[in-house]
Image 1 (tube, rainbow, N blue to C red):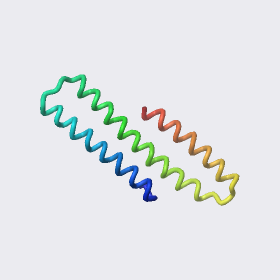
Image 2: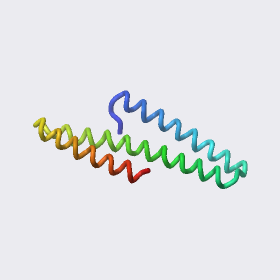
Image 3: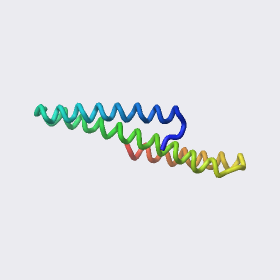
Length: 94
């Protein structure tokens, strides 16, 4: 769950964009649009959802694991580990 006002606004904006993509996809299916454009819209929708998931996961990991460390050295180590995990997850979600 995004906690800061900025993170909430960014997540809400992404969700509205995703809702618009879903609505457009529904209209395309109802209109009998060819498969290729529908598949392209589905891929875009999947990318949007994956991007939102990665962003929320990024915030969650950073909040959970950097706050437990009071030592700045350990905090930096946690930060580096989180960066590596997020990079891996983002590459998997592409």
